[in-house]
Length: 314
Image 1 (cartoon, one colour):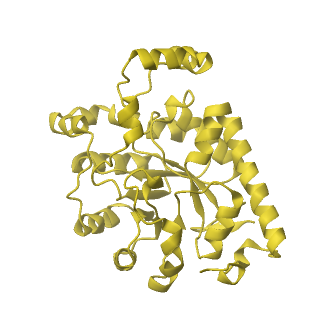
Image 2 (cartoon, one colour):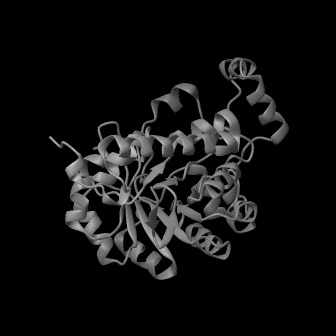
């Protein structure tokens, strides 16, 4: 089941994807995810919207540490890129599929956001989940740690943060500039269109992540796995996939269609919410076991030998 991922050997084709506000699930949630990934031997990607800072996670874990960049403000983005490089991040991921926030109806209905709103419904919910409430009270309210640095206190940057919106003017020219700035591996996340993949290759990007942001941005957006098979026809860049990975068999299907690895978001967050670092490890081991079983059932002795021949594609 082991593969080569951007020059590193890992035991299974999985990466813990960038997710925000993980401290809400478990105290120091980002650090627990990073430590679980290091113990398992796969990369962990820290989100710009994390509740532990780049530097805190770098100090706490000795595993493969990657950083995901949201461009909220150009100067702030430059600062984050510099901090990630100084902290030893080996791979930078630019996320492009949140030019504007989608209409996330569940969040709107629940009044979810930071700072948290203490409605009667929220208080009752907290009372029904005493362990979670106790952890939150004793550990402190999660904050967007990467935005708390002294450099981020600039009035213009603070105004951009208060809007809670991305810089939708970020262009291909800006991506070329980012490529020049970042000396290590650079991936672009949130692509679906084949011409975008080819353009990334022309700019010297090291890989792409096909993603619809877990279906949270636009309900009717195409599923990444639907366009995965054509990606290899468009570009020789390593193509990864996220969104909708729930079982080891899903990862096997993605690899058969040409994916280099699968990025896990919700799956590992369920483990984090249940049992912290140990829960994340249990999820990773469960998925690895399911990959093993699926490969055995279809008669494939090496995951690197997977191809479309193992699939019935309509």
